[in-house]
Length: 497
Length: 96
Image 1 (cartoon, rainbow over the protein chains, first blue to last red):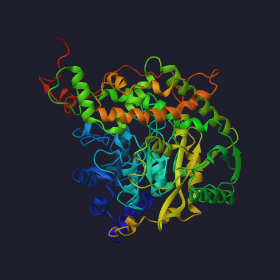
Image 2: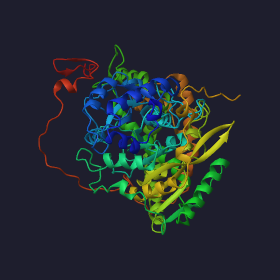
Image 3: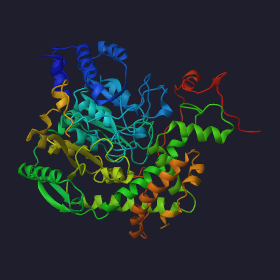
Image 4: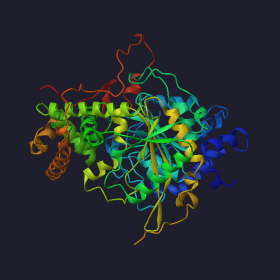
């Protein structure tokens, strides 16, 4: 097997080879390194990589552990001891993590090697990875298009075979939407399923860590490693973790899948709609029953999300004051000048915009009208889902209303960018779990662009999502199609005029 | 529901301890007015019977034993400090 073929393996297949001693963890890492050096200049997926530390870990890796010897890429908002953790921001450009996040500790305990940090929208604010202060990441299916965001670097890396799997974070769709735009599986676990200790906080009532992988099985394997209670995160649920891989292989007979009528909105791309309709038929042919459900407050999701997420962000980002870590403005006149200039110099435009909106909705006189009202509508959205889940086992929708868009296409209008999350962010507001999986391709300008199917499940019902996703995946070939950059790293994707 | 024009970006920036250029102030004023106009639809919802939800999955009374454990040394805690001396953070003068 050539090095190029090696990096195309799923985590599950890689483990079979590692455990059969057909290849060593060190050889795996070297193959990955060669691949990254070849493709990353084109896709901009990584912000930092420490191959020396990773090589040492690979030499000691126990391949019989659950993820023994498997390199995993980490979104640069999760602390990995000794590594940078920039959050895609200038304000943390020189920061080095003094400790491991709990998810990293758990990955290491499972034998995985967290070797590199992936590109992202600054502080996870964005849907295209264009808000990275370092560089935009690009979509391996079409380099003129975005990989989605905010976990766009993680998605681009896996889609280019420059990572076997990656961790991302999802506050309003930041794992599922890039997974959809790059043809991958992406999981937003139930709020509280995975510890956030060591994750730099964006919106604390919404953030979750989860995997981006090539298959549902791989996602289940990573979830097995990272899920579970952590005393260091008081929002982390103290509930047993099932073996998610054991959920795979059961058929869908008797399952009821809900189709919310509110999701058939205007503005949904015609090719996306065709692919979703076909996927629903496919799920039906596998034995699932499709049931109409109603989520009447769906239309308010984006507004609720942007009030709550920005309010929480404005409070969370107050810690970037240039005192204990991060950038500090030079020669401040006084304390106000110190804060004002440190934050002006350190934050990018989208972060500033959201701090302003978040501060405003929390400010005296507006709190009730905006923040408190949004909290109440959030409760109604949560109630919508609870009611729907009385009738169905999971809910089906597109992940994103459109396939990957062009770099620069939506940057001028923040509201347009915010609408990219229209199908995903209600899942965060309700605290339930969700998964995106490949369900077809759109053809635009003669280029194939992946389309994602979203399944939403009730709280702590990830195993059900893996069961459905795996059954669907086994009956289709979408996940087997590799991106042009993965299939041929030397290919210069034609920029269609 | 407040009118979108109530937002004064320059004033809120002061509250947020965040300096903005004049150009940013103008740009954000326009963009966030648009966002607020879009979000005005929240005013249509009848929320009179609803309790606010701070968290999606309510958990109450998370306690643990108050036991000492290993944590950062002073060196580790200071390892990212912009300015430090004598195992302390150097900060901008706060009092006159």
